[in-house]
Amino acid sequence: MTDVEVVATVEGLRSRLEAERAAGRQVGLVPTMGFLHAGHASLIDAAVAGNNVTVVSVFVNPLQFAPDEDLADYPRDPEADMDVCGRHGADLVFAPSVAQMYPEPGVPEIEVGDLASRFEGASRPTHFGGVAMAVSRLFDIVGTSRAYFGEKDFQQLAVVRQMVADHGVPVEVVGCPTVREHDGLALSSRNAYLTAAERREAPVLRRALLAGTAAVAGGEADPGAVASLMAEVIGGATTGELDYAAVIDPDTFEAPPRITRAGVRLLVACRFGRARLIDNMAAVPT
Ligand code: PAF
Image (spheres, protein in one colour):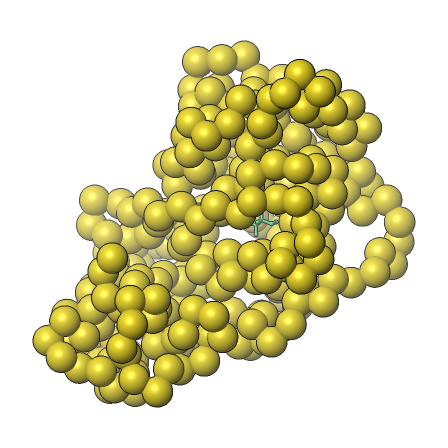
């Protein structure tokens, strides 16, 4: 357990990290919206293991919620968050206000490109623009660093990598494996919205992904057939509303002609009442 220092201003964080870097220390950043769970903790562990100073940002970013989404209800627990950060060895928590993050009204939008228009971007058209705004601002404030993101939000990870490459941002983006409950449900702050009955059904997402990987292992190379199989598994076992079940090339997020290489990814998204859950898996385990 370390004592975690909380910094609420951009200026405070910048000067603190400049001193660290001047002393030759490597900075790790874990961007979060708080309500930290074991998935976030695994990102903090990776950052602590790979860097000298770890900053966890806690900021519920209003720009990535559409007007009809759950910004007002988004779960928050600042005390528990501090506890997780301390127990996992983070050094600093950056908890800015909206005014600190976005001081100028009408800040220019970040171009997120084609990757961001599909799947999550199609269901939530303003989402990745908002994520890109928060992440690029954090990268600008924190400066040269390594930043840790969960693979659970596979498309977000791809959009962030693309943004860093397009704009020559001096941040190394590190993707970390999804952390799951004992029954396979991927950890997500939004799991808190599930009723007991929905919680029992939600692991079907992972079962669908496993059915997809099993089909590929058995020789199925047609992306359409694998996507239909995943949709059937979900449709057959839940009252949840399937949003998509897809097989994608991770570079383009388009369907590959055939499932021939290890990088191909299986994606699913499903709404269970108030909770819209997503999950993904490599089509061919690595
Ligand atoms: O994954 C999240 O929690 C958020 O999208 C992020 C990356 C912290 C940006 O607000």
